[in-house]
Amino acid sequence: MLSAAIIISGEAEKQLFHTLHKIAGVEWSGIFDSENKIPKQLDKALIFSSPELMPMICELLVVLDPNYCQFDYLSSAIRHGCHLFLSDKLRLNTEERKRLIHLAKEGGTFIQIQNDFLFQPFHKKIITRTSGTCYIEARQSSTSSESGSLQEILLNNLLLILKATGVPIHRVDVFCGTIPSTRPDILNIHINFINGSTASLTITFTEHQRSHNFRIYHDGGVSTFDFTQNSVSEYPEKYTNSIVLKSSPASLADQINDFVKNIKE
Image (cartoon, rainbow, N blue to C red; front, side, top):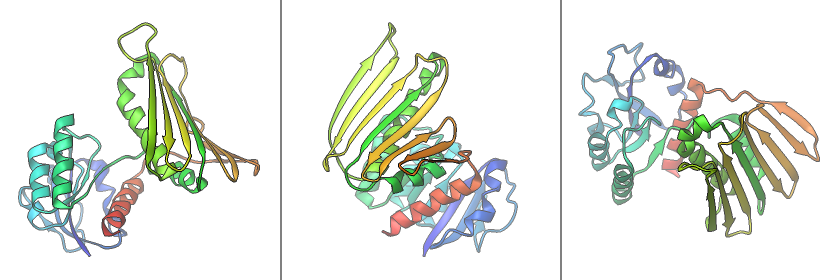
């Protein structure tokens, strides 16, 4: 049983409380809310007036308030032996992220960052459709005004591809083109995996309409996932099933629950 503590802020996270009870293998030991509006008690958790002492009383620290997703506080928590589940609104630069990863490896602890995209219903369906060697074709197009979100788009697609294949990468080839500009207008990444699987990811910022498709050719046929239309179709089964992809409090609880399982395993 992991001893856990949580730092929250804002009304959105308050809705999470009724689902936290359902996370198996966790006993909540502490809560801190920067707005001082704890709606109700959570297990036998203590209500803290400051988050400074929380890493000393828990093994898992959930930080959903971006104000505390800072290097000094998080590195101190890791040194106290805490696993970290963090808000996706991290206030860390690349070097600080690398240092946190290094500290966690040294201390034998784990870090997971909230990612609502990966934990949507499509995510589970994509993973279950791939077994053995496969070919993945992922395409996402956006308008030129959205080019600032390249990092998030790139990471989400790459993580989804890695989750779907489940094996290490053998080789990566990258093409980046501008038409003409200093920012990338088109990006293509070709990935070969050690089991013979191949993935091609293309991201463009030259379209007038958004689109996002993920196609998997596997031993059972072809599965096509359309994130824009919230639908999945399969051949040879030939059916279409609409799926809602909106984020919800349950999605966040699912992510924490998955993290707890990964820690134990």
